[in-house]
Length: 405
Ligand SMILES: Cc1cc2nc3c(=O)[nH]c(=O)nc-3n(C[C@H](O)[C@H](O)[C@H](O)COP(=O)(O)OP(=O)(O)OC[C@H]3O[C@@H](n4cnc5c(N)ncnc54)[C@H](O)[C@@H]3O)c2cc1C
Figure (cartoon, helix red, strand yellow):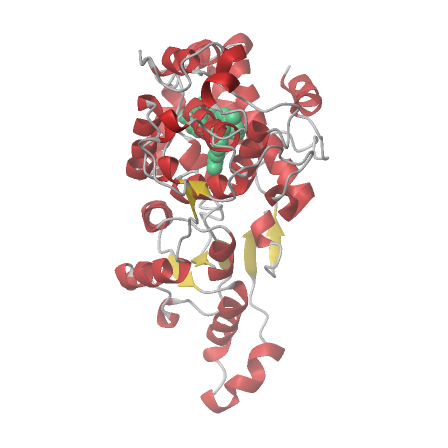
């Protein structure tokens, strides 16, 4: 999925949004697969909007822009609610039987072919169609009755487009903690949108009969459905962030931040896994640093494959970018040191580091950069005027839609 910005731009220019609205729920519908680049901050949603508006009619792009607005809506909720997006936001999750990740999901062994294939695809490619994500999360939270957060963290870790707002809030929407009801789909629905014809699964019945078909009177999944699954049904899912960062460090050694390659007295642009904007300060002479913070990845772990994607995308698109694995506070010490090494002798270095040196540091506003210091610049918003917290998408969308007319 690594790509140059120029090639991505070609895709945007040639995209035909006319069929999007009618087909987007089908796994072979006219969806774009741009989310890894939008989430990583390489592709600006504003640029996408401007391209579509320039080349197509309102009727052709409005359905697509509504989905882009969902993304921005989730970003606003995260901006206003912060880490509360990791907790049941509007209502508690009801009917929870499992506290950890159901193993049939982790092992792609649910018995619903379209979904087992989707899990294999997630591990293999790091991308999943929106409807497959919905089916997976509803199976996890509403059929296996598992607490939504472990499932959300598992999926997040494997997605190239991992984004806490889009991910955790979608999982909450499906589990009914950020919506008015739980989302359920039966086999007929799955068959329709995934082009499969599977029958006789535990979801293969009318909606009104699902509960009776799946569960015993005590609410447990009937034993004839669980024969192929391990017991206990769930297990803790964890990613060892330290090992991943160490492996990444070893593999990418050549590009790691080298003090000797930092140009003294030049500003610094700090990139991270949500800001790989190749146009940002592009014509200026600056030191470009990709900051990979252990503290961030402790809270939001991702797989090694996904982290390597972040690095490859940055290396491909941002000239002379150097990688720094450490927290912002560690980076600032290195930056301050390099800013003064040109004019201060070594024995005076330690005293001077924190007091005198004031390097210019640019970064972009984002919930993950709240602790950065320097010059904070705005990210690209589609609807910068609609910046409050809206408890429901449709209140938010009403305001955005007016701006699009
Ligand atoms: C359980 C679950 C977890 C999800 N986790 C993530 C995540 O971690 N990161 C992420 O970017 N999206 C997430 N989504 C939203 C959505 O599934 C993906 O953005 C979309 O599938 C990406 O594929 P695409 O680029 O082909 O989308 P397209 O259909 O081509 O849409 C174009 C762009 O609009 C945005 N978009 C479209 N649909 C949605 C939506 N429902 N919610 C938010 N934005 C949308 C995306 O930026 C996408 O790239 C999740 C959805 C669900 C149901």
